[in-house]
Length: 293
Image 1 (cartoon, rainbow, N blue to C red):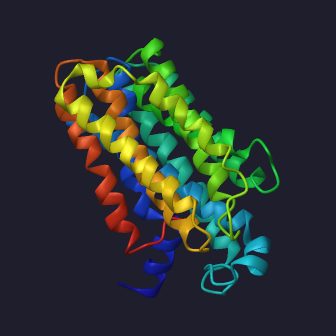
Image 2: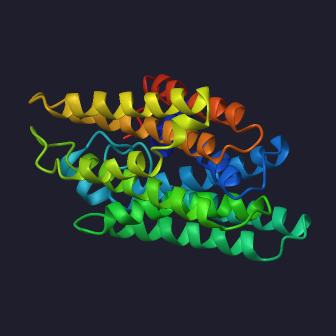
């Protein structure tokens, strides 16, 4: 692997991509559209490009702060220029929107998929440009992931119904808590444990999931174990515990997706939930190769 490829992998935080793929599966499942492998793969590719593009832009916008606080990052360390990172980031966002829009047109689904993906791209740029010092940034980050649900649902020809709205709110509250914690990565102790209160919302919303069958029980229990493990890490005073907790909670996004899929009780939901659960160990494994924070 070339040095430039390694730099791009770091900038794109590609280790978190499994959670994006499970977001796509979940959005399609919650919309009632069902899961079609080719379609899920195509939309997954498009949203992956947008995620990686957003991560590039995150570093580009944060280059001055990183020069002071994280000088080892690619831009302040001189491995790549900010101009190149901006160009690649915006290019990947545009490519993702074009793929989703083209798919929607080819499947006669109107402009809705293209509009949703464009809104997702806009939310990503807004978060990247305005997340430092912004008290609303956790909600903006959560909104980006919710818009992945919406984009996947519309691209698959599904409906934006109650299930998608409820699942989106559960994901939003989970990510508000996660993002608030991630912002404290350089602190010796967590001063915002209130953020974990937001993570109670997904559990309350999905309390009935274990009643849907064995996969519902497994997924719900796995998500609970993930959050409990992260909370135990956050209780320690060692500085390295917060990044470890954040990585665990990021991987836990796939477990929440699995719970929401199982909760639908639709035919094939158990298998789809099992597939989504694989995103958790895959994300943790990839984090050992490429840091996701």
